[in-house]
Image (cartoon, rainbow, N blue to C red):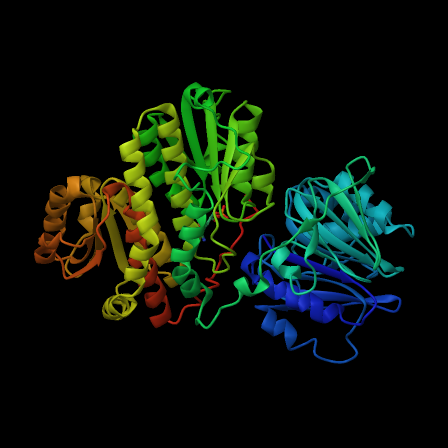
Length: 610
Ligand code: M6R
């Protein structure tokens, strides 16, 4: 977690560049922010708990300017959010200053050693402070050398940016299992945790690989590999627009992103379809023999991406007839799963940087699986470490609560399942064409749900005080229930719980009482009657039911307090539509309750810690 930015140039604008970059990285954490500037022969650091706006209040003065600096926005891991635990951190005589994203796993051991051997007195509770002291003790006038020596002592995952008081013309950065890019300017250069932080200034980027060190001066960026050999890296030209990351008239990124779903889905679909509706794999080679050779598919992901995997499982099993297991990445990596060279491992991730997913991917790779990923961020770690990448074309997703990434992930899963099933010969041309037709119709149908925003807002207003909310469904509706529940709890802090509707009677129904709010998803025609029975059971116990059903299935009205209809479509693709009212409901409840919608407490957009 956390975001880092660094700037070295000729103009005295390090502070502006860093603050602008940090604002673009707040999705990585916003517990505190800080900035360190090189000022003559000293380093001056200012930091503040809370969002970047708090930091801005203490750095406005004209004296606090420089051509070299580093900055940080924090998601607290070691040590509570506080001014003293905020980054940057410095060594004792303030000659070396560091910003860090990640975790130093052996920091306790290093802290004890630095204290007993060098008498170092620590100011903060962070793991990061050990980095500053380590570099400090190895420093003899050459920052690059000192950083490399310090890194030898460190275990864990990190991206760090470092400056030294005695070297006003240099900045050093290192990457190990945490994202880092370097931006190429004219007479100035940059580092950052992610590309959007730099887009106001540069479009030419170096994607830094694991275990690489970067030395930056205002005119030059030199990348070194683990053995300190200079690496020649191709320049990555960013073609997407920085404005895509702005709010565009909406009050929150989340609502903007909900509304971007028709576009994101069209892009994700159309970029993969040839004129004759065959699926374009663009560089991915997956032959009939390859597909027939897979005896198992593992879909591994976290949070919302995991929920997309649940729907992906249903699609692949139905269309390609290959058994699929869906696993939470943090569990997969530690349970010695049955993976071999006949396994297709599919990682799903918006950011492409989620550490648990990345670690699971590496585990599967070690065991010989073919690694396929569904990723939104181009050039991210998961994308780079995969054999094949199927990009979602959602565009940048800024709000912590994932919306358009989820629906575009679903679109990718349908396309992958269709491709595998069709290539393998399990599904015929008629079914294939019908399915593609259904997918093509989704963006317009989704727009019809967005047009009902006011209706959903009114429902949210009515039930905004409900402190326990349940979500139930059968088949793919149960997967969507998990996602609806997660959306509500993460942004409104309401205790919500999702469960397969048929499972309710095995215990959880004990919690249903007069006035309990239950979202009942009943979009599957072949399960509709069973769902109606489940709804009756909870209604009989006094629940307020909000039904989600396809237009025309009006029988649900007699059993529900409210019904939100989605346009008619085949059962398989309803998740692309049924999740949308749940997203909008969560948004409005959070808004009515005065929550910080885009940056909910305790969360960060990109989870790069275990
Ligand atoms: O970037 P990823 O898709 O790998 O992130 C996985 C989860 O952290 C993410 O989906 C999280 O659950 C969202 N905040 C949910 O809205």
